Image (cartoon, rainbow, N blue to C red):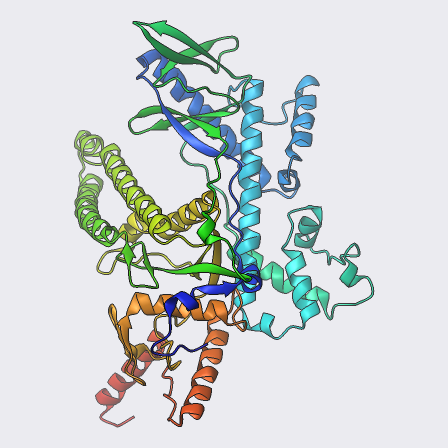
Length: 557
């Protein structure tokens, strides 16, 4: 889809309900949201008891995660199947056996750890299925399949059940329960299964690690809350189960909000806190945003490197994000350089007492961790405030975003600095966007992002020479726009165009864009711009080496 130079953005933001349903990413409102309750600083004895409990609970979860990685246990992560495993373990204990290590935890505590480990493994498998599906749908071999074969591949990754683990063990599912596969046969199902298994092995994490032992879950039978009057005000306290049977510790909370259901005790850098779960309240859409004539009000959002989002009208939100990341990167980089210097000094010194002194006073990570925690809290505030302003100032029924998963890259800094500061930013922005959109009853739509900032929406020309930083000037028609604003217009165009699906390979996107540009040039009687692909680095390095060899030999290539 191409735009006219005087096209109305308001008309472009109206998209049919049918098209939105085809692209919807499925942002459902979570069943519960977390509320953090601060705790009055406990005594040293209580703090020691809570620390021992958190350490034992964390080791228990790490142990269960290792057991769930085996073929014998991994099926118990499906839904509530962990209860069957729990009953088997209890029966083993009653029979005098020791089927698992419990690290000193009471019965109810290791059962809670088993449930939490099962949930972690289940979520990891669902994430693996989603990643595998996205990679497969972008691959070239998936585009050459027939419709029935594509449907078969999607069925392999649609559920987390016994059939999925049978498929991982080498079996070829037939899906006889499915109406479409009763009378039709898929061509080469074993080959398709093997191809999907290869993708799953490539995208799945090798092992889930639970390194930080700083949280404990308690259900309603593991704690008791009381509220008393003290000096004319209400004071709420909670009694928590410990490692010792029939002995609980009492801690005071700030505030008096009622606590019910499962709670979570968390050790933070500032002390202890209680996390409670509450059902979120859905905000109602205003009458002005109701669907009209089957079309929905949409807004395109382009995620940037210096700001949180840019919208189709050029307005930017969270512009302080880039400055915050870069300023903190410079500080972290200086600290890492100094820490590396002190680490090398500690390794090279023959004096053991001096080495211990350096490790205790110069390489302690508590101050460094507090610095990172403050930075992440600042970034969270920037992102949340930006999203709140977007929803308030740009109300829409649907928000269109790019299907993009790469991380922020702070140029000029090492990989360790990028990993510490920017590795989690895109994932956090995406999570908060999906949550807030669901909270306000909005939908999220994802469209392919390939060549979005290199394509001119007025003539269809795709060229990386058109973009210079934040400025875009088409090399074919001369159109000028802000690069992020232009990317939003391309997102809207692709949301209208039925040829673009939610997930497509870069090659397929480029082919469609070049075909549209050639057709537009034929209609206008102009010469189409020839696309020049970006030269690969390996090819450029190889060419440079060959040229150096020829110069040394005194011959021409």
